[in-house]
Image 1: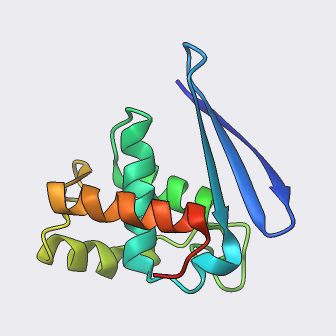
Image 2: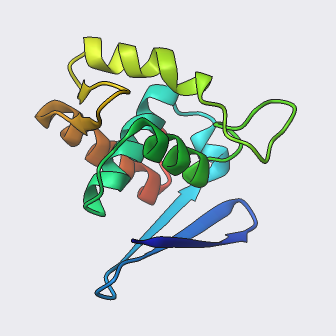
Length: 132
């Protein structure tokens, strides 16, 4: 089972996903830029991050991933060390209606072809430091 280690540098969070065969996926997201992006797009990034690490995207895994990547956005307002599951509920329904994801909280989520293309574009924009 993969473990996650992270270090915080100013406003950039670096995560290293440790896989059993020494495969590492490095994730860098500017937290201030993330505040300017819609929560729907951040959830697409979370689902994509889980998918590229070849894990099932259950609701719990998605909540953990989104909170790990974007802690200021997916935390409880008064207890910022804890994730807020309510921030995923409506956006997940919206993403399903727009046909960007499929699945439900009782099973698992996955990106559709359109959703994957959009997630890749958002990730690319983050790496370049551009606003969408």
